[in-house]
Image 1 (cartoon, rainbow, N blue to C red):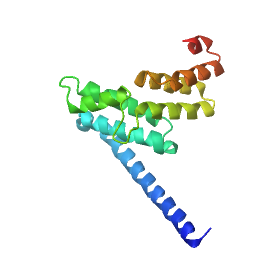
Image 2: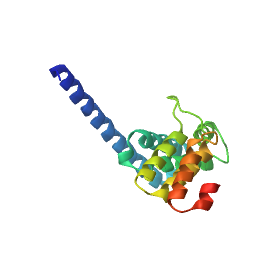
Image 3: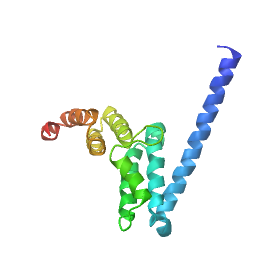
Length: 164
C-alpha cells in the first residue's frame, strides 16, 4: 500500500470516528429532550428523534441495536402529539410510518429489516420476529420482512406465527 493510500484510509477512519462521536452526542441530546416535559410535548422533538434513531439503525447499529424500533416509536409519538392539529410534522412522520423514503431514498422499513436480521444472527428470534413484524407493518409490499419473520418463528418453534 502506498503512503497516499495509507493516509487516505487513516483520514477516513478519523472522519468515521468523528461522525460516530457526533451521533453519540446527538443521541444524548435527544434522550434528554424527551425527559423534558416541555420538549416532549412538541411533535417536532419526536420527529427529530425518529430521524436520528433511523440513521443510527442504518449506519451505527453498534450504538443501539434497537434504534429502528426507537425510531418507529418516536414517529408514532410525533403523530400522537400532533393529533389535535395535524400538520407538517404529522405528514412527515406518517411518511416514515408508511414506507415512504427520506431525502436519501432510505425508509424505516429497511432499518427494521436490517436490525431484525442482526437479531436473527444473534439467535434472538423473538426480537427478530418483533422487528420483522413492524417492518411488514411499515412497508406491506416488502416481501423480505414476512419471509425472515417466518424463518425466525420457525427457529423459535412458533409454527403458528410462521404460518401467519
